[in-house]
Length: 276
Image (cartoon, rainbow, N blue to C red; front, side, top):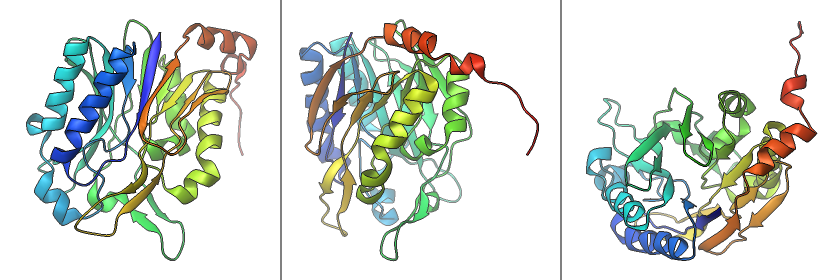
């Protein structure tokens, strides 16, 4: 089947971002993609909590979700909205970083809230405290489709193989890691982490990403790494989108899952052990 990763460069204005994202989804569908994936925070790239409180809405009121569900139904394809930043109404004011799988009828098949928060100090000048603005999810999620079982994850989740192991143990044949990755950690770890998750699980790994300098009139713009990747179950990179926004097509060959797991049956060979 034909699939597509959308590499986006969105601003901190959800309204302004929506038209371009919708157009790119339709472009991918017109080119024959029946499974299309967008990156993390498809609706809004921002780390300014006051601004987010002004522009983010709850799921039921979110216009990006509503519009992209309509596009999926119009085009009759499966759409992974990598994630949306959403208001929650939580007493502490934190948001949700939530991924959605949309079916060809526009219905929501599955939701996943990002479990692992990006709380890191990369250098003296580059620190992130995602948990200050977002509440972590607590539940791993797989979604059933006619073409594959999909294990849903988001960005920093890729550093936690226990999550991917749980997803694959529950039947996942595709692991999704929509991302807005730091350029520093991206250059160091992006390819290695995603290839490792594919190799150890014998699953497709699909990682649509935000890229470039994200415009904002309110604060210092954020920069993301790009390089959206599709990695097959043998660990081969079949698509690397580089650093430019766009629609990137590839062939999603699901027979490759069974073939990789037959050739290297590492999950069948795994043994329990004591210690240390």
